[in-house]
Image (cartoon, rainbow, N blue to C red; front, top):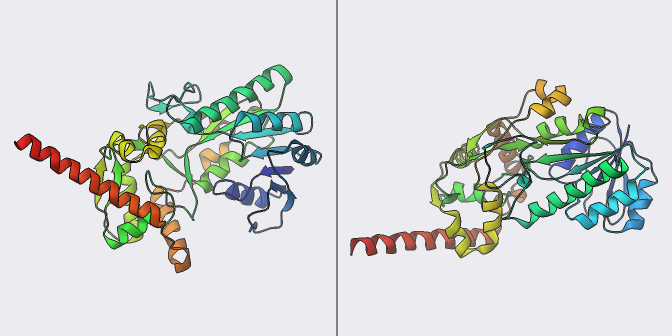
Length: 340
């Protein structure tokens, strides 16, 4: 099977590339060539700009069985994909986002029939528009698309957090005894998915006749509160964690750029019904899943294996300190006002 990954070197896509290689697929990456690929087996490279139609058409000339687009964020980009790959590919798989699902949710258990509507986050609205375009292309022109919606998916180089990024900054705060923000009261439910598990479901869709014209989310079945997520990270880091609970609205007042990703995604309690992907890809149901505790042990081992990887984002670190200080001051001022 010939597979083209648009992107292919990112957090999620790299695990999918590696699994495709172990299955004996002929893998090609289409990207700008800014990252040096590092896989267990050789991959072919087509260097180009995914925003440039002639570059896409040059890639499409390879007549791939599967094209997996990990770098399509706007309808303009996806429209170019449809034009370039129509009649040139057996299956086009678009990576959307589980954040596209209805916010606020009517029911916390999300299925593929949950409406797509996110009034809070432009990123998610763009993904919805991309899906609408692909659905129209499938219905009107039989464009062989499949839509996949990951939720928060991490690999060994990531430590996923609600605030503070996904690098070493938050674990470093934990290790030096600095407080960490758990938004809201820390009790909203969330799902973290290992890229190794995601890859099993995703690659299982390649050339799968049951996936044509369909949409799937691929997530873990493990549901944790945000407090439990941070406590799990701390255990993997070999330390305790001091959690500070700050409302999303207050966070948005201090740092407006952080609010959309909370209200439109991480502040909402979610659990995913993965029945559909399990039915279509039996391997996803059968294989042992990576628990979040196992995943974080793997991530911290990666950071600890080489101290040069332990990079702290100083700007974010300072912003977290200032936000905590502002929250504590506001709480103290409110307590004094009530006492008076």
